[in-house]
Image (cartoon, rainbow over all chains, first blue to last red; front, side):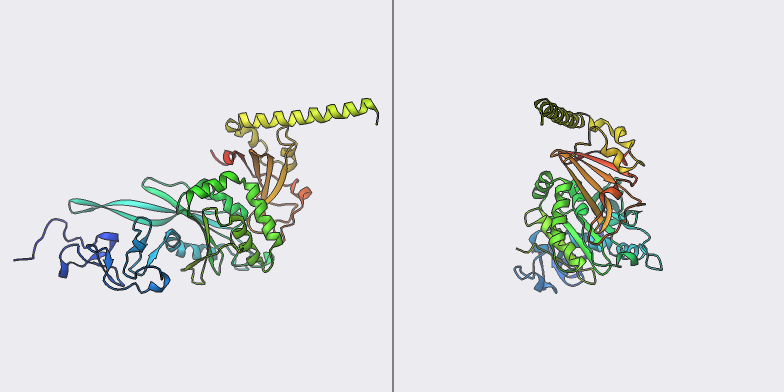
Length: 283
Length: 131
């Protein structure tokens, strides 16, 4: 019958970006159902606008991943996310769980927790062919002390380290603070991981913070120029002269230490810990 | 001040700076292969490492906290190319948490070292926790 064909492996319904092919109308592989909208790979465009188009006013609401498919992905057709959101999505449930585990019932601190995020590639056999499935997973969850955690950044075969997360719990005697961002030492930790899109997250209870390497050359130059003591001093000086709450002073210390040309972006999440906003240094 | 005493003082200053300069060169040449040298200070009080021939001439001492406000250790800068991070995990004398981050050096000196990292040209060359 015209238009009907079958081959080994054709029962596998998924393709580009792991989304389901929608072969009935346009033929095999010419239409993908991204959930929120339909994508046509021949045009490299969606057929309807991005429901979150207001977040990207400079871009056509029909584009795929801001025309940057190497760096970005399009999650369920609802707008591109960057490395931070990819890492955050993978870390979210575990981060919330281990935030709770950082405390005893009487609100004293058990310890900090930390884990790494790895991109894992696995080969899936589909009929006679093979496909590579890529996913971001949480790995090496380790307890620390009440004030620090020593991460285990060991990765396995087929895995790439893309980020890490640790908690910042404060006990009753420490003021039960939430929303405390990065220390100078946290920033210095990135010294050995200054690769594009590497993400460091801190779980701070009511929100989450992220440091992302946005320009590895600038980040490498930043860490080459500044010792840990230089970074710590810059953080200390900014914290000492900052006004406001403990939370605000820590944020000021981070932005001031990073400056505007370090190649490292500093982000703060909303209360749902889903959307992030960049915090830039004030002039 | 007598002429002789002035000369003696000058000699002492020159001799001391020569020892410090020599010590820094020793660190530059040997630090990569010598984590054992630093491992001997693990479990000892902080002031012991400050008496070390190669460290006592340090330029700068900076406290650091990994969770803001909770003391983790100190960075001892020997010169622009060399610094040592001394970690203390359990505090017996110094109160670890201080929101204003005003820690007391003399109390910190009495705490036991849990880990040492040595940096040369901003690269970690010795970590006593690494195998």
